[in-house]
Image (cartoon, rainbow, N blue to C red; front, side, top):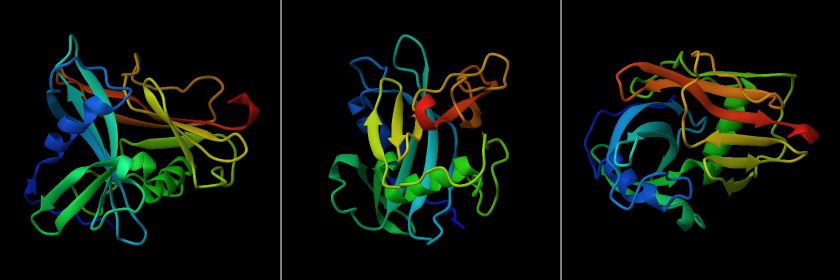
Length: 221
């Protein structure tokens, strides 16, 4: 179980993301600095209790229209060898000290638990409360049994998503840019075999719901 510490971070998570986000290939902002506002998110637990994992939803108001992003982060007490390219930044935690924040799509601990979430073996946890399930994050898929196969996933950055590819044609598309479902009931593409859906706060103050991740398996992907 992840323990949530309500303490001071220097720099804050939004300050770290403001510096890092424009370097991403799927960033939709202009030349100026992003203007980020927190819009939601959830956490996953590390069974070994060593790595913090958080999926942060932020909305950027700097461009011609607001854009909402899903940003998975991991927090570690020491640098992760060979992962300098995935480092978002470092911050000082009021309780835990120096923390290294990484893009979670490149962190093997988060990748393993994200597959487990899609498979229904774990539940998303509340972003701000210890030992509390986030009831708004729901996963579903067709078929039974384990799907990931090889957890040493290959990561590829797309124009609006990050692709995690395992063996036997299994592919998980993490939607970096979030789009509300028109009727509030998000459905993946016809060829998809699973999905993770969730909710966040829209810029107009309403509660939006849409897809966080879409699963594709086999030759149909």
